[in-house]
Length: 445
Image (cartoon, rainbow, N blue to C red):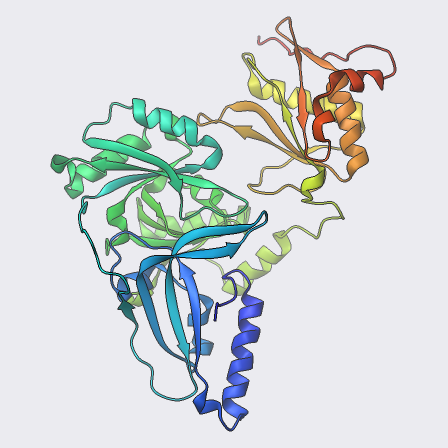
């Protein structure tokens, strides 16, 4: 049977607790064997059970279920799986792990299972990986293809990143190296060159060799923004999930413990909680973590976690996209904040800027930035109900913006507004006849 989703630990715990209770009380429990199918990503060059176990983990492997988990088999060749999606079935190629639960017998070491023959084996050369936000993929692709980096035969992408989630889409580009650039030093020099590119300063760069490099460490974190805070101290980064990454670090263990402690104080939810060895090296021992007790960290995360929002929070029906096309002037950030302040004043809606990644709370807004971290002219806004959405739409489409002597119009897009979301004429007719409200951008000194 399929195991519950990885994020639904409550459902998995209920299933395993029920099976454990049955195994210890039922008379015929020894005749019942349960096999869980768990999909997981396939990592490059991880072809045996030990290598896969180093990088992938599931709650079913927790110590409390060790007595009933008897065997784990990894199916190496991916198979097409069909998952439930918000808009319909989703087809993905995934590798599978078969976890056998039984109340009798002894545990058997994990093993790999081949279910399809290998028709052709080739392309074992290492490649560079550039991981970026999905909204920046076009700019990153342009920068990579126009770069003067030598030794790269071809750039491929954007591909789905191992760190991509339903809410936070991320992409990865692969740069395949020629025969003269495959040594460890040559690969690292090219990684360092890419890290220094201005257009890639919000990206993470690493090499495929990290998947099997014993000296690489595994960083556990709550949010990718935690890695952005220490990006200058990361020589190489390759994501293996949305909350784990393989890293090569700069600096001593003591300096990292201090840095992790300061980060945990600032942002206990997204911070790096632990940097450790992989399981096959030093038994997965922790290399560095915040200098605080685990119970204190859990308490801090609980206090920092946002309170349940009022009805309508994160409701896509009341989310909208504000769009300003064309040139943004000499100070795009100044224009952005002046625009949002003017909208908040005219609509009497208390709009607050959000600095979190992902979904927004009620009355929060977040700008969309390009690969150079400049405002792209787009703003995501989350409102409480349809009346607020219609009110903001009337103001946006009944007003214009005056920037450097050039009159510009704004657009507001929302699924709830339908085809009338950009009907400027109808919005203007609903106004008070006083004409369009203009917002003038302050000239730079």
